[in-house]
Image 1: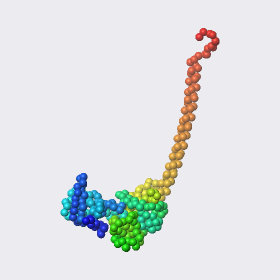
Image 2 (image 1 turned 30 degrees about the vertical axis):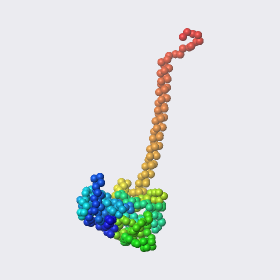
Image 3 (image 1 turned 45 degrees about the horizontal axis):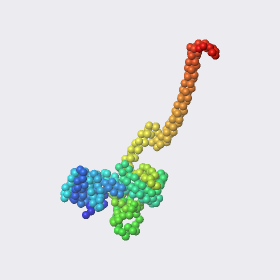
Image 4 (image 1 turned 90 degrees about the vertical axis):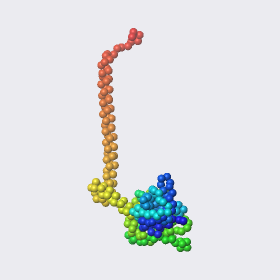
Amino acid sequence: MNTVKLYEADAYLGEFTATVKKCISEAGIYKVELDQTAFYPEGGGQPADQGTLGDARVLDVQEVDGTIWHTVTQLLEPGKEVVGKLDFERRFSNMQNHSGEHIVSGIIAREYGYHNVGFHMGSEAVTVDFDGVLTKEQLFEIEQQANDAVLRNVPITASLPDREELAQMEYRSKKEIEGQVRLVTVEGYDCCACCGTHVSSTGEIRLIKLLGVQNYKGGVRISMLCGEKAFRDYLIKHTNLVGIAQLLSVKPEEAGDAVVRLKEKNIELKKELKQLKKAVIHLGAGREGAGLHEQGKRNQDQCDEDSGPAEDFLPGAPV
């Protein structure tokens, strides 16, 4: 029997009780199967949840053929009930970032017709791959629209349509899905096949920030952050910007131009220094040559004095 996925019914469930079905020891760690779980297993670009099962720390969660296995730090006795507690701050951050990615991908699909062909939620940033090229100007507009969706605070819902309903719907999907399809809908922005956890409304995302873009496999890879992580990233960069502005004695909004001017001045000074070095080398070589000539003349004069008057050499004369 498959593990009951409590997170699909309630993504905000941070604590639950379950019965241990199996506990397998592998190289000093333990893999536990429960009858039900709120721990999300790694999949669909979203990392596994972390937390505790009783006194054991949950290090990893994976789904294999419908069974969810929890990698834990100590033995849990089969048949016993155990209380599971999620690291909910981490889970909620993943929810913010995953929902934000859906909004951005939906906007890009609608405006430019590009497909999301890769998604990874890393510890430093979220990366999303698209099969078309986007300019920085276009990305700025996409970011504006995405944050407009956040301000509008529209609902995000999950549904399980039957095959007939699904055939009449337009939705994004990276691959053909066999069996039941779970759709996550951001009202007015996106509808996508997804097994991940999401916030219930866009306002909970707080902020969507596109950090950068690079060419990747004929398309682009976008780096982004949402929610609390995006806000912390802004604080770090704002603090650095204010510090640079103070060093250059300019306003923060003028720091970029001031750095450009400083760089240009540095290039000019390097050119001047290079020219001065050449002049010094040339001057030194001239002085050294004059000194050698004078020394050679003195050596020749000394040699003439030491040799005395020249003698005539007559053919046949005894030597």
